[in-house]
Length: 355
Image 1: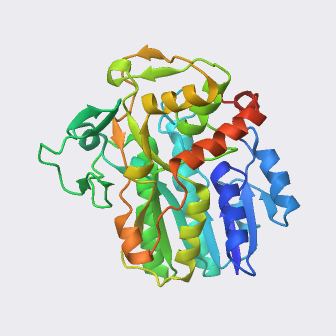
Image 2 (image 1 turned 90 degrees about the vertical axis):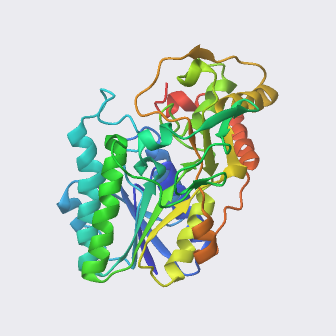
């Protein structure tokens, strides 16, 4: 089996590549990356050392995609993953659309030509910001939890959001590019007859992540806490009660392995996340870091940040039911892995351009 992974020198792409190499006998993996992100060259060298070939190319350029060999499966892990992309002064809305939607369209043409199955790594950020912001919340143990004394909307429960939750705009420009990519991927698969899987991922976390405050928050928070870099609780009263769940890219690789072998579904959208058991607020994360690295108090900034939401937990019940997948890594084991990496690499945030 030959597998193409885009964005292969990023954190998720590189870890999924190694995870699949360990899990699938006889697999041949190659990938493409534009190597723009600081630190990506390090991953390129590590992948090459285990026999994974990396092509230098930009998915926005059809000629770069045309240079790639044929594959049996294509995993689209390339994206500008920041929810603030297009409005943060670092990238334009047009650049965001070209990366996240235009690049995916070029890949789908590649899949059509080579009869390659397609796995899109999407995001929880396709869900409606107003709908998420209006969920009834209360505070428990320094974190937001759903207030179940109030009637909850459809597709949300204490277990988290399910795939039917509202995707009504606004979802951020980033979320809109991923939602549009989902739609065009599903249409291509149906129209041209190749299998498509769409994995709406929660927060992915682990050692070696190029974490920033807008993406890879668990990694960023641990590394910044370890070196006593400035941290802030932004919005929601400036108390750090906002909650996210997390899971490890090795578990994502295991899900993709299952999807390779599974008969394609008419509804290809599945959740992949840590779930309620692997969720944590920033305040709870700070307490964990205090115990590991020593006290470091974040500043309080109650000004709202664009597109921010108080609580996102992914319910992967359908994925478990239909594909037999559940995350195996606990959040504590993931935090320990990141903390060990922070101990060994105190200059990591500077190395990857996060500070």
